[in-house]
Image 1 (cartoon, rainbow, N blue to C red):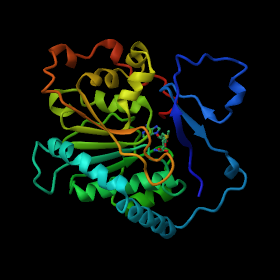
Image 2: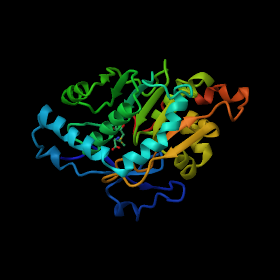
Image 3: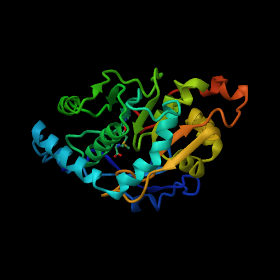
Length: 287
Ligand SMILES: C[S@@+](CC[C@H](N)C(=O)[O-])C[C@H]1O[C@@H](n2cnc3c(N)ncnc32)[C@H](O)[C@@H]1O
């Protein structure tokens, strides 16, 4: 099975790597990213000799195999331990089950073509089961085909039919599951929920926000992802355990929650200025 797009290979310090004409040819497969992370674009062999699409039942079989593998892993045990307290906090500090927590999944790619996508989807469903998150379950990725949509519907997802670019105000406590998405998407999720009441009921699983702040100048991050940048003041970040079963499925991934009360943030924190209004900062990772 071919993965469908990108593999995160490393952090890349944009500022310290000048655009040198003699070095650019040495890394032909690194797709530069304004986020400062580099993705290896995989060979497009299948554009010429593309394998026939697998059947829905074979994809469902692969998904089930991956689900069982994750369930048995140390990674999963450690992750569940680490997430228990933040999930309780999300549902108003209560451990009563089932929990009325919604899940929104953006940017997992194509489960029909991508093993990474399959692992990511299965982890979300396992977490939803183990923590008894019984709210709604939505998904969107612009690369998903009709076959992908069939598969995720069978898994219990409701497909979002319109590209909302992460601009989804929450109604209930919500986990946004967004592994390896573009910084604009994270910033847009925050932007749509930029009140004390909503931010404290939000968990974002995705690229480490702290890593963004370490590899980018704060002025650049403020311009490209203003809400992500400002959220660092109230951020509580829980890095995912290492290693995962295989490859780069959950590298550089953290769960992010926001402790707006404890930090006693000023009124100004919630004010949105005109220069934060740009919801499309030219992020090539976001369609
Ligand atoms: C770098 S890839 C990550 C794919 C996969 N999660 C992984 O870890 O390999 C970013 C993903 O974000 C998706 N994406 C781009 N724009 C999006 C949008 N507006 N809403 C949801 N997903 C989007 C892309 O199609 C792609 O699948």
